[in-house]
Length: 383
Image 1 (spheres, rainbow, N blue to C red):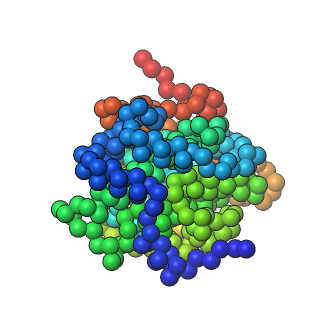
Image 2 (image 1 turned 120 degrees about the vertical axis):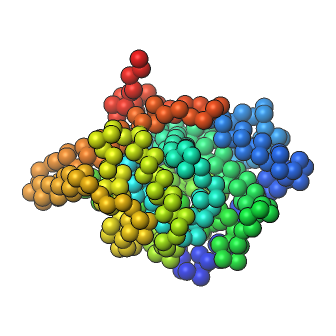
Image 3 (image 1 turned 30 degrees about the horizontal axis):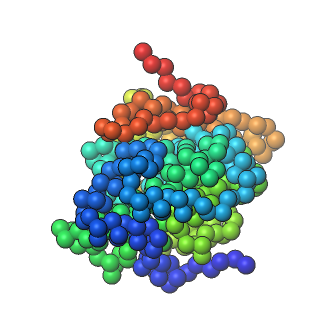
């Protein structure tokens, strides 16, 4: 039976956090104060693995219990991993130029992103860490019980709880719970999950890339499994892509709003991507955002205008030409790799940029499995 999500139901979900993870952070706060919570945040952020010996017992218990979630369908996961191996660079480009800006256009949800952002000083910090999580989740074995994807989801869930606690207990910047709900609430978690799952699929469709119905469902299944691990309520987990579209539309159509915070984050995101791409492609980040967002597939709105995305340059014409040519040739039964080449090239350049970028002190370097490096041709030569 299909699940129903209306504006009233989702408004109720803005009042709900994550009881399990919140109880862990709450106990830490009671036992040791804000220093303990901040120390936990530092340990989780600055270690790609889970340093069990450095964590309090209550956190180790949480990691053990949340690691025992029911295993997702292995065949679906394998097919989702295969799609990521085939179109990973394109997916990461879609996420950066379509998915993240969609989150910035969510008027209420963006407030937490803005509060916790360091994009103005290090524009790619959050994007790099998000990209690493995606790679961890969708690489072979990522969703196995001890996989890197499971570990990443457990850490992000606990970090969300810490953010919730710290924001709600920050006297210097009172949080308007009546207007915004609980920080990192269930509606925002579900919206973010749809960004990774449905919006990425919509972006691949916009590019005209061939993705079968079975591949779409398998990829979506992978993200619903990780959503459960990240504490999203079961009644906010769509059963299939069709339900995912319904939920995504309800959230983004209701939340869509132009805000100063969203505009600033979009501006910093563009600057950050310009630092990763070759100089002759400085206009590509804005152009790609216009490509996906001028008439956004899900809501039909001009999200680019809502975010004050700068005007595109010649690179938008190249992208549109590639997709139009692909559409023309596909109607005549002729395969055309050009549209994939444009998005794939940009995605690979972004990956190479991440690999070259320095992480903050104490952070591990950005990493991708060797087999994906070889398949994507993203190995960076060192001098």
